[in-house]
Length: 336
Figure (tube, rainbow, N blue to C red):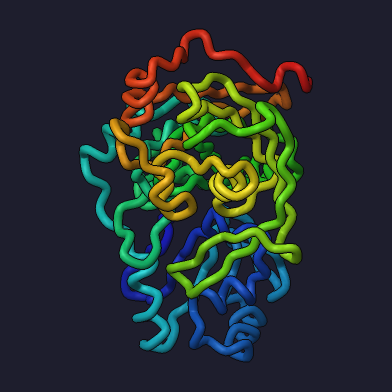
């Protein structure tokens, strides 16, 4: 089943848990997606087996995992109408299929790694009809299940994103991300040159503002967020090419840490850097790229390194500034 598919004539829906919904209690997942469904109705559905997770009976307090499929029974017309705009999949266009096939960095029987282009949303939302999750039905490659998201990238961040090819692999990969055994390295072009050249950022973050217009801000009582960073190369004193390793996975963590902790916002990041983030001669787009992931393979346990090349506006900016990708150094080698 694909996310948001309704069984013909029955009104039953099968909805995939989103990459940002992992570890939610099932009752809270329902509250988020179907706010008009009360707890009493949900309890009845669970008691009678009408709501299931990956085909199994569960309790309201079970925590769901990204990629799991939730069976939702027929419901009152109002709740059904509210849900339909969120989950109705669009047909996958031929050019999108071709784009996904070109973006494959790694593929085996257990997982797929894609080089997600900047500008492609990972999941749908208000006003977002075209997104990666809605295209995954075209990436079964002869299997019965469509791939499942196990983590996410911001819409305007490019680079490596991993997909599990079945529910069991999704659970294993999700656990690796949760245990923080996966090493993720991002490349960023920032406005200004951080001092010191290499360091560790610890700055708690929290979301503020109305839904759809939230902004992440540093707060004393926010969620802990830590990042290692190091300068790879500079373009005079105007800009620096950074390697950044998030040790936690907070929303917009690298962007806020660059702007607030280092006072050097990511180039093109008007949301957190304002006008300072826009540089003459460069595209007014976010210059943040998920360069590399090192992960224990979910089947063999052996380390697997997946790297995404610079493309699009970031490749153009590196060329314009004379930054040497071929001879890039690793600022973290001294720490390892």
